[in-house]
Image (spheres, rainbow, N blue to C red):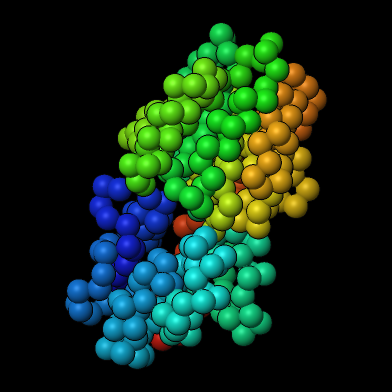
Amino acid sequence: MKITIVTPARPGSQHGNRHTAARWATLLRGLGHRVRVMLAWDGEPADLMIALHARRSHDSVSRFAAAHPGRPLVLVLTGTDLYRDIRFDAGARDSLRLAARLVVLQEQGLAELGVEIRRKTRVIYQSARAARRPRRLKRCFEIMVSGHLREEKDPFRCAMAAAHLPPESRIRIAHIGAAMSEEMAEEARSWSAREPRYAWLGGLPHGKALRLLARSRLMVISSRMEGGANVISEALAAGIPVIASRIPGNIGMLGRRYAGYYPVGDERALARLLVRAEHDRAFYRRLVSQCRSRRARVTPHSEQAALKALLAELPGIRPGR
C-alpha cells in the first residue's frame, strides 16, 4: 500500500512522536509498503493515513477523511491526547470519531476511552533495539534520566531527590534531554551547579543517548503524564531496570505489580527507592527480573507483527495489498 504518516514533530527533532513515525515507516517498508512521513498531509492520495496526535494532527485527519471517505485512517494517541486533550479539545475528539482504528502505546491507555471508542482501539508497544552495553563506571552508581525538559516530564524531580540522599551514597545522576524553553535550560544549569550529584547533559544524538543508558545502573522516568514512553522500551531492551512515577502510562508499560514505583512529585520517596536500589541487592535483582519479563513486548519483531495485524483488519483494505 501507499501509506502516509503524519506527525507534528519536525524532522531531526528528538521528540518521541518523530521517533515513532520514523520507526513505523521502517517497519512498514519492511512489510513491503511505500511510506511517506510528513508534518501535515500535502493532499497527495494514499491508501492509508496514520496520524500521530489527535489534536495537533486534526487538520490533516479531517482533510484526508473528507477527500477519501472510503480509505482507512489510523490515529495514534499520545500522552497529552489520552490524559488531557480528548477530554476538552473538540478537534481531538473529532479525530477519534474519524479514525477507523486507534492505537494506544500501552495497555492502561484503553481505560481512558469510552466503550465504543475502545472497541476500535488496539495496543501496540513501541520497540527498541538493544544497545551494546559499555563498561559500567566503577566510581559511582550511575543513574540515567532520559527526557526533554518540559512540564509534563517533571524533569527536575530526580535532581530534587539527590538532596535527600545520604552522604555515603555513590549515586550520580546524568540527565539527557533538550530544554523546551530557556527558562527550563536555566533551571537545569542551576541544578547542575548547586547539586554535585546531578548533571544535565542536554540533548544528545540518539545513539549516544542509548549508549549512556546502557552503561547506567538504573533509569528514572519521573513524568506526570505519558502515553507510553519509548525510553522505557529502550531501558527494557538494554536490560536496565527502571524507577518510575506511578502514573497510568508507566504502569501500562511496566505492569501493575512492578516494585519500582513512587508517588508522582514525591522526591523523598524517589530518593528512598534510589538508595534501596543502590544498597539492597535483592531489590535490585527483583527490578531487573521484572523488567526482563516485559522485554518481549518491546522487540522490533513484536511491533512489526502488531502493525501487520492492524493493517489486516482495517476496513477497505484487501488482504495481500
